[in-house]
Length: 98
Image 1 (cartoon, helix red, strand yellow):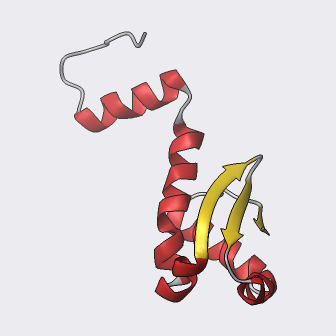
Image 2 (cartoon, rainbow, N blue to C red; image 1 turned 120 degrees about the horizontal axis):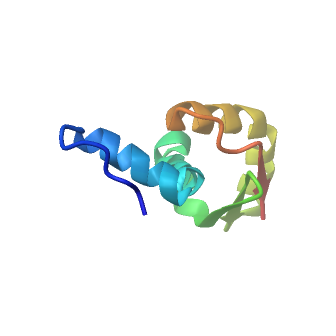
Image 3 (tube, rainbow, N blue to C red; image 1 turned 120 degrees about the vertical axis):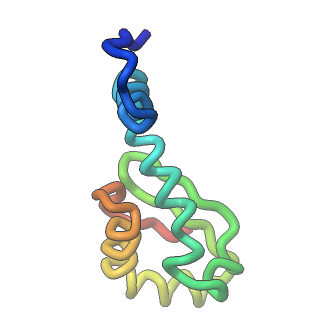
């Protein structure tokens, strides 16, 4: 449990301490990247996406369309940079389109 140091901490400081104490910062960042997917790729691509998850710093994206899978493969590097930039930290190293 987190030890309370003083009564004059801001809520932000308390939340940051909890995140550090429970080691959930990485999971929160992963959730953030998944939540940003729609806004980064746009509505048309987001509609073709059925499932997203991150494992070992690789974002797995399940797509309905083989043609879309091929096209996004060409934009992989740009998508990784855009998602990490939108998240504000390096969360993913690669994307696998399945």
